[in-house]
Amino acid sequence: MMGRTVVAFVLCTMLGFGQPSAALAASRDEIDAKVQEAVGNFYKQTSAGKRLAQKAAGMLAFPEVLKAGIGIGGEYGEGALLIKGKTAGYYSTAAASIGFQLGAQVKSQIILFMNPKVLEDFRKSEGWKAGVDGSVALATLGAGGELSTDTIKQPIIGFIFSNKGLMYNLTFEGSKITRLER
Image (cartoon, rainbow, N blue to C red; front, side, top):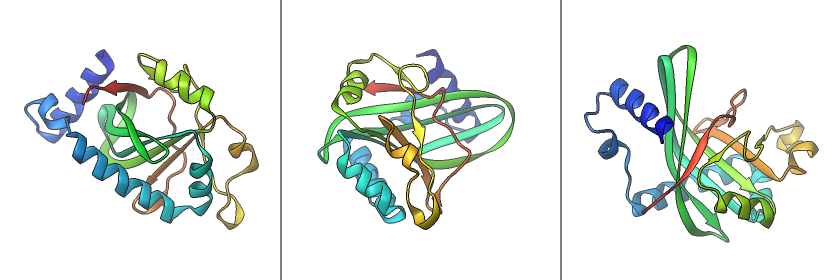
């Protein structure tokens, strides 16, 4: 909860919002619409990712993760867990960082749970932290736009992208994912 508060404060301060909870809270319908749009964009950008998603036990989609910082940075986004194409719950992702940083960006994140066991472990957790509760293999594309064979063998696979395509040299490590009551 402390991490989420710090991220909300940093983002709200930088963006000039007065109320962190009001500024960052989206309704179920808003989240669902944005998730569907993000999944559609994801499928357009990588046919290999689409094929992998169709085999996954569950897909966690965060359509808009805002990352901002001035020395101290943070990121926050809300999304939904999809199982067989249906919303099974709402979640937030948050992370904080310290170091040289200036500016803001919006990215989308997709996390695929490739088997029922890792999906069940995720759903049972009170607050799931990437790199601690589960390692997320960041997908990279090889020649011809195919995913590397090492990536497709992993139990949890993540994609980070913008409207310009897949983004590289980013990480899920340290991101805390928490279930939202919506």
